[in-house]
Image (cartoon, rainbow, N blue to C red; front, side):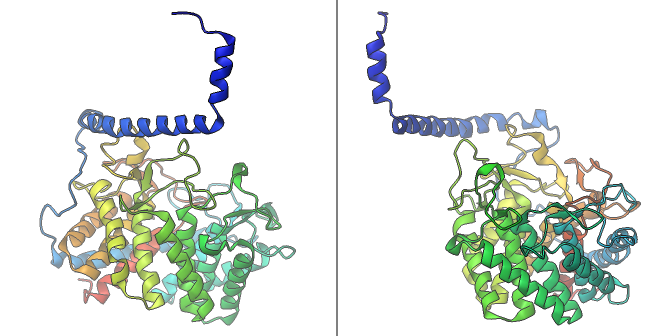
Length: 478
């Protein structure tokens, strides 16, 4: 082969513009993605060896055997007993900080404090919500509302930034800010907890606080038809992580639940309008309609995938099913017909049942590919098959709500299998509460029960909603 001259190299370099480079990179990535999809089929065949006893599923979920409607009274009894005698007592014994106020959520297996005492905005708001919701659910003589009220006072007295408005992301035990950022995700939960407490207590001051948080958030973070901006410095200047602004389904999903509760509590049109806009953004921007799932990845400010190189081609089954029932609650609150979202809602649930659900034991995987079985996706890490507490809770709610809405027995069968998983493997009947994570076959991976992300919000909410759904169906505990 003749040598290449320097002049020829220069001529090639002039033709190889940045635009050409981007085009070559794009075509290379597209080829790589197609190759991954082809290889996926071959790799899936290895799953029986890599994960003995576990087989990938591609068929739409159908019950192997008909569900037993006569089991529902027993399930309701266990649900209500677990809520009243296990979950809530565990989370009210040692969480309140008598010395400094606020909830300490780092707990060991039996509910004793582990040591970290910082107070996180999300956890303070979630604890308020769970206690107020339990009171509204009917557990009205256990002091939960009073404890929630103390939490509200700590939140508004110690975590509110008087100088710049908004809540600090994290404060120390002394109430001084440790992380002074303003994060939309945390403010969504503040609205959620304060609005729930207002409905439980009838306290106009709490509702006023929920409305104030809404007003500040939308003054600082509103991004028009693109939803909300997500990360700010203390003074509300945009300060995204790694210098790159992003949008996530996760933040907008939780804003949806906060706005739904606020719209119910206030009855005001501006709150309903914000709820409607958030729902529209999620449906238009956050869902991968071809695969009937939400992509669990960061988008840029305009909801474009930030870079194909960074794209996580995965979906969170927990977020899919949680979003499904939250969409139903939102359209009900807005007075809009459910028929307009039927295909989307059931598509999200069916996707999780088809690709992420353990049809043998119950329980749902942590994540998987946007299309295809989580078990068969052996090119992803094994962490995807971990069964964490919150995904199990959301699957309980989604399946019973889908059955209650449609009457399709496949959802009742999935609900019963999911409940059996939660009762048998996720619930710690000796130590209290639920195990944070288990293996695919049910062995606990983590024995501690609480931290800055784990509290009774998911588990208590699931049991409350299942109880209410079953009773609305005419079921009574045996």
